[in-house]
Image (tube, rainbow, N blue to C red; front, top):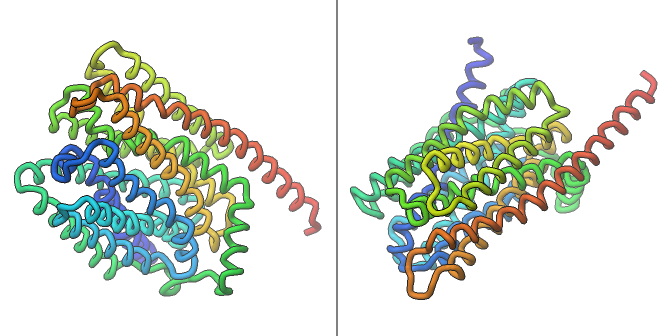
Length: 426
């Protein structure tokens, strides 16, 4: 390895570690949802507000964070985001009041919002363009190791040492990663950071307008929307109760299935990156294939009389695992159709899509579970979970139509730009 590449590899490795920690903090509620409901004495709809608060802040902050990223660079945002997530886990560790717990998840969402797109900007500045699709996909894939840490180890620690110890340990892990970022991460190989030109609010509006006006950015947003929400909601909150309360799994077995989901993500992410790099004009075909497969397997699970066989639930987890790498294709569209100085703003816009869909689905599942659970029955029956997860089909239909619409618009824009370039004399 050359001297020039060693710093790039080190900076990228530490930045990805920060994203792993962010995914860990983000997903730490998913496998502790049943314990959280008991600790705070709340029903399914109220439990959903924990994740909704976290994801709503994440989604709402994407565009402002994108603008801040273009202006202040990745290192500062990774440090600020890491500090916020540590604070959130500290508060969550000692919270016994619902309002304080929701505030803790808001802090986690704020910090999480600053992390992933900051790592993508490091990729854009530290590595050549031909390697970007693989590294972007690798970032999203390796980051899911955080969900592994947030599954079996966290559940085991929670049940052995208690709520406060488990989340104090999570905060300590985040603080350790924060120190690594402080020591190793730099924005570019050439300077401490490269910023977008300053020009006040008007310049910010123009920058966002330019990013939004590019059909490829909106194609990325709807790609992220349609491919992310099913797997994200399953992993973040409702998959664990569905497996334990609806399908009769033990807590350990359910956590094991969520871990399998992460492992499959690690395996299939590079495959999808390779397909997108080799066939950039057919990335939407991959998007539609992932969406159709997810909807089809869910249809079989929801229609199965009684509890589904374990093999079918394994198949569900496997297809949901592909959702994460599929959603990363949206960021590849943002990179393809926008100049590097606008990557933060475009990526922030794209990242809104999947998390808005996830918020809608988390809320909808919680509400339907409460409505479909007989009065006086504390645990939702399997039939309630069936009705709740059926809401996904409305979101898939909307997302698929929009991906098709903006794919065609992006292709027309690309053809027009290419024709204009050819028409200009050399």
